[in-house]
Structures are given as structure tokens and as C-alpha cells.
Length: 126
Image (cartoon, rainbow, N blue to C red; front, side):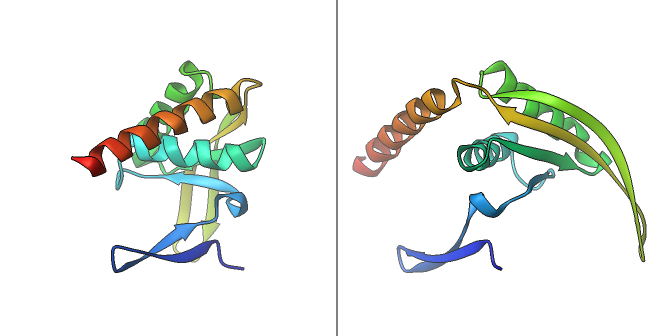
């Protein structure tokens, strides 16, 4: 089952992720922390809990994302751990942070989405 949908914007095809089907958010340094914060919030909008995980090279980025969302009141960190998975390529190590949304999550999320939409509309008008 695919977690992606195709949409066309401005003549270009773009894959949109179905956040309700994500079991975990895999963090790396390929994108900024703010992008991962947005993805975690989108997943938590669909599910009450999720997992934020990364390889050791992106551990700092993972912690930055989880701590920032906790400080802003979106989530609670329920557990964190490290794990090692053995496969044909060798050992893969991960930092795993289990999070759950707070009781104020929906209110905070909706307020921020309204802000974001207004900002995007003002940029389009320029």
C-alpha cells in the first residue's frame, strides 16, 4: 500500500505523503529541522502517538525536533532508546524517540495552520 498521492501544482507533478499511514518519522540532515517538525505534527494530527527515529549521524537533529515540539507544547516524550538492527549490510543503529500528542495539540496545530495559510497567501499576493 503506497503512502504517496500524486498532485499537480503549477504544471509539475509532486508526491504528497499520506501522513495517516506513517508509522515513524525518519530524520536525517537532508532537510532542515523545521521540515521534520512539520511532518511530526502532521502525523500526530492523524495518530495519537508516533516514533521519531534516526541513525547516529542525525541524532542531534532528532533531539532538536523532539525537544522543540515539546517546548512548544505539541507533544510529550514518552520514551527514548537506542536500537541496533542486523541485516545483510551489517548493523544499523538508531535513536528512537516515542512521542504522544498533548491535550492542547489540536488547538495549537489549528492556530499554527491558520497562521501558515495567511503567510502563504500574503506571499502569493506579492
